[in-house]
Amino acid sequence: MDVLEAMTGRRSIRAFLQTAVPRATVEAILAAAARAPSGSNIQPWRVRVTVGEELARLSAALLAAHAAGQRVPREYEYYPRTWREPYLARRRKVGWELYSLAGVARGDTAAGDAQRARNFAFFGAPVGLFFLIDRDLEQGSWLDTGMFIQNVMLAARAHGLETCPQAAFCDHHDVVRRELGLPADQALVCGMSLGHADPDAAVNRLVSERAPLADFVSFGPGA
Image (cartoon, rainbow, N blue to C red):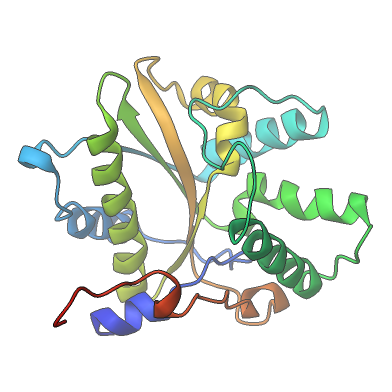
């Protein structure tokens, strides 16, 4: 797989096979991803990997917290505080496309909540990744960590694997921190499910739309 194929074919997968992923493969993915750039080469990212019984315990704790309506303030704001166009329309469009493929009818709040809860079961993936950053680092290091996370997703595809980056875990960062024994001086950036995509799952057919270049690119004179 060349780099353009890895980039343009990447999707957020929401149904995985139970096929195990060897630790050596996970290590190879993370080692390749660590070639991401960072200001002054400080490499601010941290990763916690969870599999097997630990992942199952964490998933159970997260699902219980979600079902009970427990939710703590996120350690940072991921989405706009006030939604406006064009972002609101994009959000609604991909949401309805996802729910349609997942068999969730409009207005069926119970089914919608069940679909959201699947985040906390890692969509059936055998590997969970959590990305952290030291709290005393600044915005530039968060940008660097974002580039590292993107590299993880692309490197995974080179190994025949797929991913789903998930900010949903940030709603229950207290549960993640407690169950995985994460240090208090590290903030949770996001989680990620990693594994083999289920080729038969309808929800994995979602290919989200991208805006045309004219919507976000401008060229100066003579370009």
